[in-house]
Each structure stands twice: as C-alpha cells, then as structure tokens.
Image (cartoon, rainbow, N blue to C red):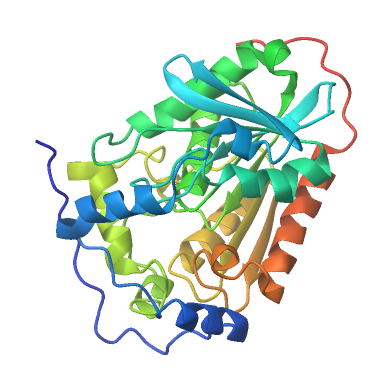
Length: 341
C-alpha cells in the first residue's frame, strides 16, 4: 500500500495583504469558478485520477498536428521519451529537454507537448524531447530526477539518431518540471556532465520548506497555494520533507553552491506562491557569478499562461521566453561529435 502524505502546518492566519491579480487573469479565474480548493493529503488519490482525466495523453498523430511536426516515442533506458520537431527540419537541431509540470504528482510528457511545439519549437527550429518521469507518491525522490538524468544521457548517446546537437541541449520545464530542470543542472554539474546549454525555469518548484512571505501572502488566493504545495512536497519526499539535511537535488533552493551552472531564464508571477523562492534563486545565481535573466510578471498567479493564454501578460511572457531561447541558441555550428562522459 502506498504511504499517504501528511500535510505540513497550515499557513499563518495573518498572511498579510492579498496580492494584486491582473484583471484579465482575475476574469478568467472567476469564469472557472474561482481559486480551486487546496489539495490535501486525503484527497490526493482522487486528485490524481481527475488530473489524468483532464490531461489525457494525445496519440502521436494528434501531436503531429496535421503534419506540422514529426513525433516519435522512445524507450530511453527505461524512461519514456517523446521526441518531436518541426516537419521538414531535416538537419541537426538544438533541443529542449522538456520536463512537465504537475507538482511532481500529476501531468505527463504528452499533454503539454502540442503547446510547447507551437510556442517554441516551430518558431525557433527546435527539437523537443519530453520526458515522462514517474510521479509521486509511488515514485519519490530521487526516482523522478534520476529518470530525467537517464533520459538526457540516452539522448546524448543517440544524438545522431535523434538528429539533435548534443552540445546545444537546453533543460526546461514549468512548475515541478522547472524544479526538476534546476535540480538536473546541479546534478550534472556535480557529476561532470554532460553540460546543458541553458536552463528554462518557468515558475519552478524549488523549495519544500514553505516559509517565504509569498507563500503566506498567496495562501487561499493562488491557484497553487501553501496547502497544495505542502501536500505535493510531502508526497514527493516522504520523511525527507523539510529535513534540515535535504540534498539540493531534491529541492534546489537548498543549494549553497550555485556556481558554474548554465545560463538560466527564470520567470514567476508576482501573485503566486513561488514568487519569493524563484527571485531568491535568481539572486543566488547572480551572487555565484552566474548568468540569469529574471522576469516577475505583474499580477500573475501560478499557471497564468495556461489559465488565460490570450491575456496580455501571458502573450508577453511567451514572447520573452522565446526571445531568451533565440539569443541563447544563436546560429550554432553543426556538431562535430558527442561530448565526453
């Protein structure tokens, strides 16, 4: 039987002023019935069943979108991997190793792929490798992270087959996927490679402790609040949740050394739970001499661009991500071989 997680302490009653929410996002949230009820441990199983129903896995031919993209499924040494690229892009392409969101307890590599292809792969000429890592609580740390590492190593070894440049792989993800991307960058640095070209960290889930001011301020107001966050972290970490000696690969905000990491793009909403942990992580990257670009989108809640993709702040955010990737990738030479392990 799977051990059920227990929630951490409830947020303080005096959480401070309610965060400002962008008007278009507020309207979209109201149209959906308002802020969802917090996820508690006893509701986790049902939440996962509903999440799987809400985010079904589209078949590869549907991801191909009428021939706009080519799609292939791979077994990356035991980790399912979906590889997609713009149709007609026959040469060697840079690649985004994409790690999906879902609080480490939900989501899948397939459901988010059409949007990633439309917003990033098509305009940038980018291949996308979407990793279907295992979910908590059935798979706790370090299993999801190690699955992502396995998928990356497999992709590098099979770069010629995938027609990607192994020296131009960007790690990226949103929410839990962003946290995994940051953790994977730390792990690869400490293991000696392969070195990613960059990190695309969108509202990354970085800190299991839940002690920031934004965690308290957004309690009861954000689409992913302190209770839901504590439930997810407890599911993902079990008895390691909030442990003083938790490894930084489990929660990157615990890292004391952020030197020698690839360039990072970080974004977060000013009205979301993760605001302060993301801005603190960007600041720590700068203090470590790293290159980081930080965007704090005004009035944005967690998952704002999924909630209201046509809102002005959502369109601006997508354009900024794309611009950073375009600058990071540049023209790039054809690869001369695989990087050494």
